[in-house]
Length: 133
Image (cartoon, rainbow, N blue to C red; front, side):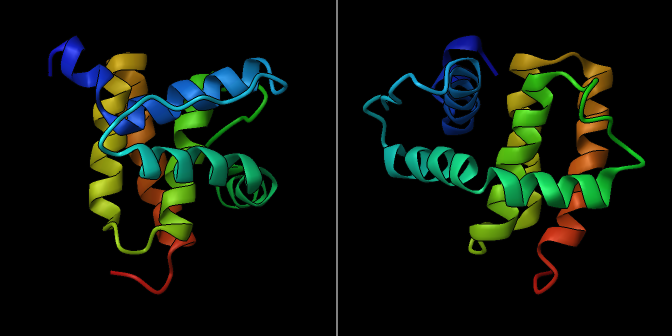
């Protein structure tokens, strides 16, 4: 995927907005005109609002796999956004969510971490959406 195309990917925008909020939580979130603007707002706002619930699930289910204090923030934000989608966007299949965040990973992280992200998302998806697939 070309850089120009990936910058239009709604989940890239989600991760960018979450990162901006992480850096400065007082900064007002503005959302670009985008055909998926409603989706972007929902995932960003939902991830921020449910941060504690998502973090608790991650700590409980991934304590053997992820060191929350040592994991890069961009990787944690991708996982958190994906977990939000697993938990609260049931119309989107798990495989689609994982696939989309792996595309996003191409923009933000290197290949070994992408494989790690895939394994983490696969594992947490089984715990966060029990009633599906």
